[in-house]
Amino acid sequence: MKFSLIIFFFIIFISKNLYSDETSEWLKREIDIILEAYKNQNLSNENRFLLIEKTINNNFAGTGIAKFVAGEAWKKSDKSTKKIYIDNFKRHLALNIASMMQGYSDQTYELTKSKYDSKNQVTLIDMEIFSDTGSVIVTWRVKESKDRFYVIDLIVADISLVVTKRSEFNSMLKKVDNNLSKFNEVLFDQNLQSYQKITE
Image (cartoon, rainbow, N blue to C red; front, side, top):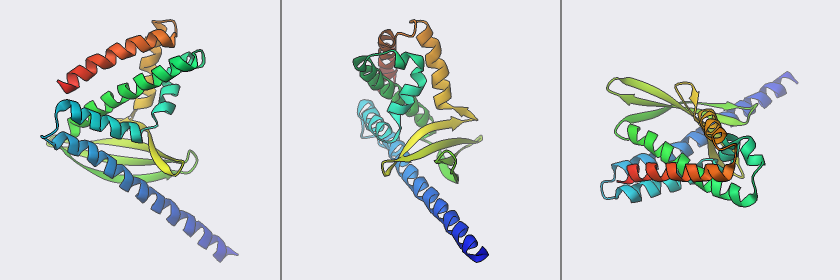
């Protein structure tokens, strides 16, 4: 009986490690697509961003994150407003991630640690980015859904991107009385300014 239990837990342990390795391999492929886009001098700034935006939208749980950061405003909005907001948010997220990754594009990195959180069914993958002055750790939180992986959060210097965005959006939504329709106008204008800067 004891031997059977040992075998059982050993199989579970091995399965989790294989799962983590598979997740890390997937994440590395997607990160490299973004970083290689910045190194490709044949791409225009606009085409480079559009390629990066497509990669981010394919691999981030954009809709779920959008709902979370909108808070109460999401519940009070109609279907059409929600759809516009999700589109606006996905572009906003892509612009933010693209800007962050651009800063790392001339540096080297290594995925140093991968841990599966069985309670939350999330894999946490540490990415160490090296520079002349030292290194920084970025932790990617990855979840599997419908037989594929999605990034659900990024943690830089112990600060969660999703939690930060929720706080930021909460302040912005208060200025428009939690009216998601009005907020869409604000977010659209903000995205336009950021898009012009990153593609100029």
